[in-house]
Image (cartoon, rainbow, N blue to C red; front, side, top):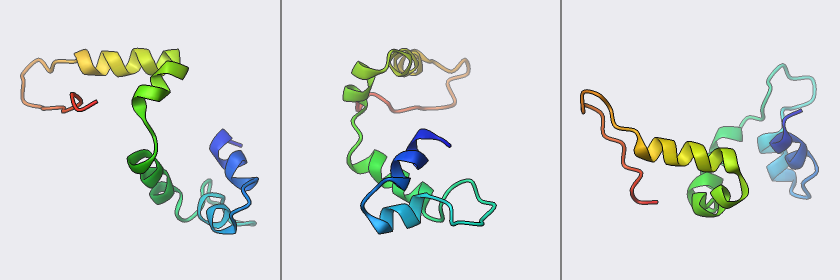
Length: 82
């Protein structure tokens, strides 16, 4: 079981468990509101600057993405706000 689902399964919050963990007997691999809960966490609480201090692979990926320049210049990625 993925780490986040294991963590949610142990949560004291019934609502969190119901949203993130798939229902018993379901063929789903995630709960019904998994994406919304994860999006909310990322937008409201997660801090990439703190996260890259704890994960070397995330740090490398983050800086490679910041350095990326499309060949044709048609795509704009705004990560400078970090």
